[in-house]
Image 1 (spheres, rainbow, N blue to C red):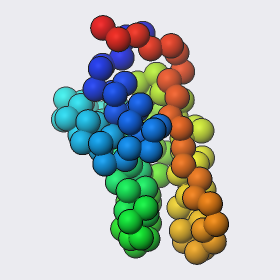
Image 2 (image 1 turned 180 degrees about the vertical axis):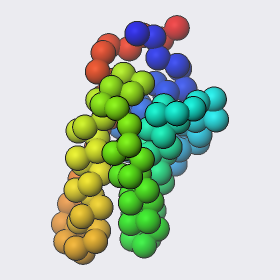
Image 3 (image 1 turned 60 degrees about the vertical axis):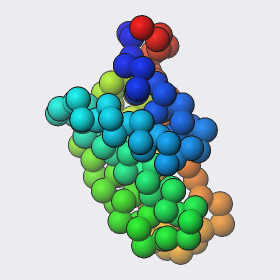
Image 4 (image 1 turned 90 degrees about the vertical axis):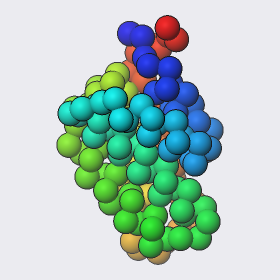
Length: 121
């Protein structure tokens, strides 16, 4: 499967913990989508912004955005956009739980993986 270059770039930025950049890249791609694909990319954008906020000490903003990211990720099929959704979803749930319980020793952050090898067009 060939993935859109903006999706690949945004996922690479997210996985490198470049959350602001991932948000910017994925937002451009998100505007071209609909349905489950749009929901999943919106979830990843929200998670990126949540981790960005968390890194800047804004736990309230991080909690709000992670809550939305979890809800959106829960609503899509496992292999939407050939992304392995379940591990991503599990980690953002853990992050949300840690913020809610204020038991933040080491914030878990997901690494997003494609279910198939990706190729650049």
